[in-house]
Image (tube, rainbow, N blue to C red; front, top):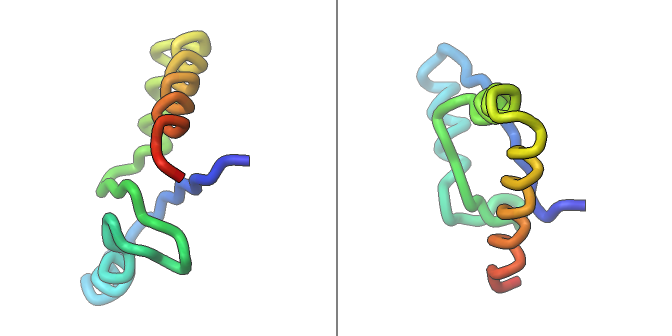
Length: 76
């Protein structure tokens, strides 16, 4: 089981609702005991899926291995 959770939220059109969501999630800050280590204003999950389709499964598995190395090198 990974120590990371990736979530994509399609933001509502209403500006106040958008601000309510984005103001609660700040890069580098804690949220419910977890640390927010990355954020993007794009659909990174779909992008990742499409890149995997273009690059192929072997390259995706190599990328997963490299990510695991990065995480293993980080302090707990």
